[in-house]
Image 1 (tube, rainbow, N blue to C red):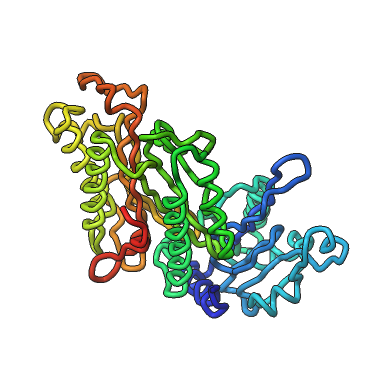
Image 2 (image 1 turned 30 degrees about the vertical axis):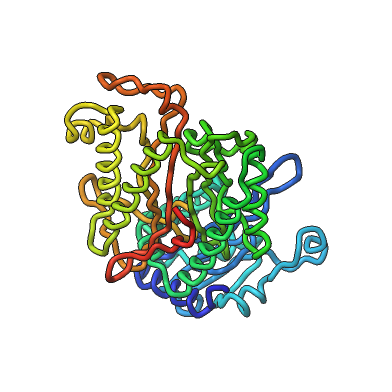
Length: 431
């Protein structure tokens, strides 16, 4: 289950049409050291991968639609039997052309020599200044040299534009090929959550649940989309809790936020349930507020609606619920406007999802204009209420009674925007 080379070609063609007489430069992700000389498993830069499907480090992709012959160029590591013995087989220059559709390919060591021929005739450079500081500096130096000699040539880039702004809107709309892989990632995510719910019981440790989840991913050829959160009891009130060391106790809630990655595409699901199978009255009350907030928010995910609407819907349901419990007091509009609910609900209700867990794409255009939802976009809907043991309400709001403290609930699904409304892609997990 992979993206076809014809789709990669179409992606590049779409972007090249936008950049016109410019040149776009994309850098592969750098390798990262875990400790001493041990590296993390390599993960390609998402933009680079989206355009090329090429999954090796030390590579550069050039899109130069103005060039008469070489519109797509790859600089890659050359074949080297000794290096391959230690680190694995490389595609090399020939593979870059034969397997990945490059019009021309060069060894990465020739980048300094060959790159100028693809930028001296363009009118602007498109490049995103990313994690590789050394390569960022190389792009700036190249542009400065071209500017110095511009008066003699009369050609060359007058400016560097961040490629994200012209390119990322393209990534926001998922193709049928992408959606096929996304559905697979979400199916495996759902299977792992269902397995975790069956496996969890009083006396087990959070890391045991994590192991079952990630074992399910691995058996199907996937892996964690992000560090799995398995948070029991008061740990559920920590948004990015990843220690996963606590032993599950009777009357605990267990919050699991975990997703599977397949072909770099990601699932992202959160469920919260009682470890012993039965909510306490307080847990059930908070859970029902979050569930209603999530269901109402999902209803608001529709083509043509502004991105923020489903968040606003969730906030209102949560505020109303907390006011009914006496945990918030005052006028509801004032509470919402002044964000007095933030000690209980401090994050947004969702994010874009795709090749990155927090995927590419703007949420707003300027200060006032929100992104409009469109068919093919995939996003999460994940409201929550977190009443930490040491919660401190904003000034003027009541103290939280002890019976509510330590309850944390989040419910998250992945939702596809469709022509007629939406489709919940993670509905196989009960809530």
